[in-house]
Length: 414
Length: 138
Image (cartoon, rainbow over all chains, first blue to last red):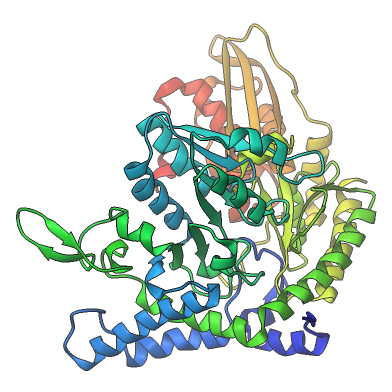
C-alpha cells in the first residue's frame, strides 16, 4: 500500500481547523513545537464538547430521563470509537482514565498487587517516562519485587542482547515505551513482545507518544496492556485510556472504588460492575470522552497513514538541517524508525535560556529533562531543548526554528 | 494565561546578566566556611552552593559555586556582591522584589525560580533549618 503524505495545500487547510495556530506570541505568529507535551485541538473537538455541554449534559448511567440516556450512549460510543481506532476486539477492553499515567498506575496497582510475588521481576526500558517507572518502584518497595531496566546501545536503539538476559522465568511483566519522548526513536516492541511471550510474561506498551502518529492495532501488537492520553492526539485533557485484554480485566481487582463501579453494595461488601465500568469509579470525564471521540474522528478523516508519511518528510528535512548546524549538539542516533521529535542543545547555552530566547520569536519548544531522568543519566545528558512536530506543523515553521536558533547562538556565543 | 505575558528575557537588556554569567563575581568556595549551603531546582538542574564567613555580625567573605542557566548563575553573582560586607540581619531581610530589581532586566513568571534560587540558598544558609519560604505555600 502506498503511503501518500499530506501535501502543503492540505496542511494549510488543516491549520485553519486549529484556532490557536493563528495566535501571535510576542508579536510573532505562534510556532508551536511542543506537541510531545500536549497537542492543539481542532475547532471540531472544541465545538463538539461545547455542544455536548449545551445540549446533552447529564450524568451517565442509571438515569431514566432522556438527557441521562443520551449522555450514556455518547459516553459508551466514545469507548467504541477508541476500540475501533486501535483495533480492540471489544469496547469493553477500553477503560477510560484521566491520562496514560493513570492507566499505567492502574496496571501496577491492580494487576501488580494481585499477580506479583516477592521473587517476581518487572523488566522495563531505560527510556521509560517517569510514569512507567515510578508506579513500579513504589510496587517494588511494597511487595519486594525486582525492577530491571533494558539499556540502549551506542546507536540509541534498545540492547536486545541485554533484554534477552534480563527477561527470564522470573519476569512477570515487560513494559516498554513505544516511542521515546526524549529521543524520538520508535522501539521495536514486537521484538520485546516475543521475549516476553517466551517466558509467559505480560507485555505492556506505553503508547502516549506513538498513538498520535502511528496507526496502532493492539491485536497485531499482541500486547496485554496499552496506555495513551487524548490530549497528545488533538483531544482534550483529562481523558486517556487503558486497553487490556478482556480476560485480564475480568480477573483484575478494581483500582479506584466507589460509585458507578459496583453492581451491588451491602454493608457486608460489594460486587463489581461489568467491564469497563468496574475500573471507572465516580463520575467520569464524559464531556472530554466525547471530545476524544471527535479527535479520533478528525485524525481518521485525515488518515493516520497520511499523517505519518507527512511527518516522516518533515523529520528527514529537519534532521538533515539540525545535524548540519555546527553549534548544535544533537542527541539520539536516529537509527531505525523515528518520530519528528528532536532533542538538542545549542553548545554552551543552557536550554532554559535558549527556550526563553526562542519564545521571543513566538517559537514554543520544551526544555528540561522531559520526565525521563534515568534515560538522561544513562546517556550523560542533563537538560535539552526538545522540538516536537505534529501534522499541522510545516517546513516553513521548521525554517523559522533554524533561523531563530542561529540568532540565539549568535547572541549567547558572541 | 494573559494575552500579553511579560517577556521572559529581553535580549537588549540581557547583556548585563550575560556579563555576570561569563565573568561571575565571588565565584568559588570558601573552605573552611562558617556557613555552607547548597540547593537546586530539580526540574531544570540549576544548582548553587554558597559558602560564607562572618565577623562581628557582618558577612566578611562570600563565594558561590554552581551550574545552570544564565539567570540563576548571574543572580548568584549579583547577590554575593549585594551582601558582601553587609550585616547578616540585612542579608536575611533581602526581599524577592529587591533581588529581582537588582537583576535589572524583567524576569518573566516562568523563570522566577531560576532568578530566586541564589537568594533561597543564602537565606537557608543564614537562617538554618528555621527558614520557611512563605511564598512556596501560596
